[in-house]
Length: 313
Image 1: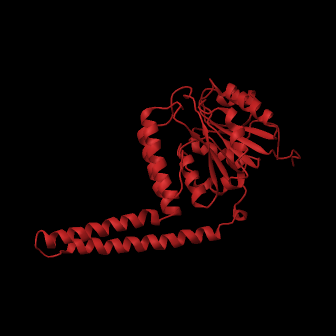
Image 2: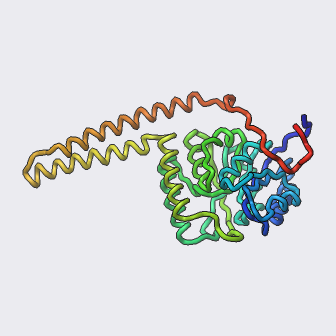
Image 3: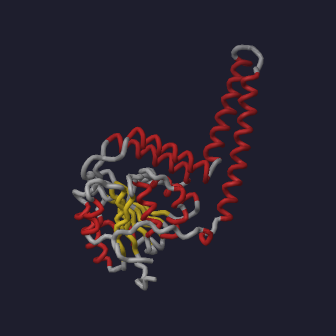
């Protein structure tokens, strides 16, 4: 049994083919954390890289966890969350977009808030279509959560470890994990804050596919909405169906001078059923939270840690 005390902060950096920049990134993180004056560990999760990224991270002094093959950015983050020993977790991308110097600004707010997210400003590097898509996602998430979401897809955040572990099984293995954890945290009643940051253009080729990952983001928003607040979906849908049926029937009676018709009646009846399904789903969702207890979560299984090859549990 190791007698080494747990660090206060765990910095988790998912990596995939980032050999060109990983040493510089990890060194900057180390300098920032030493200046912060809090006990810490730096966890580099090598997601099946083929360019020696994991070896360079090991040489840079990070605790390295390796996937046997490329499983996805979200999978790497989940591995880091499960294996982190710190009370506060910091998540940031390893492709050079995020500036480690912003870490203290996020960490200092954890405690007053359960999760703190680095919100990209207009001066951040990014393409026009990606900024437009992020604006759409933020608007949808704001409606779902009932509070303003400034940056739904930012991968730079700090949060309490127990909060992260509560939702780790819900996170997808893809780049859309920030979307899921943001919606889950807010809908579960945890506090959220945003800190403005400026991001750089990533080093190397982007791994995000706009159409594929963009559609996945939208699907995840709807899935999390139906999981945490079903009436946000079912109520507008039922109301739309009811108004469509009512107005169509009214048009037939007043304008066309014909019978109301079965189509209008069917739409209105189905709208009532949709609303009732949403109401029942809302009650089930509430019961889920009432029974939720962090003590019921099992300890994660160990995975291969190559930072100390000779150490045995």
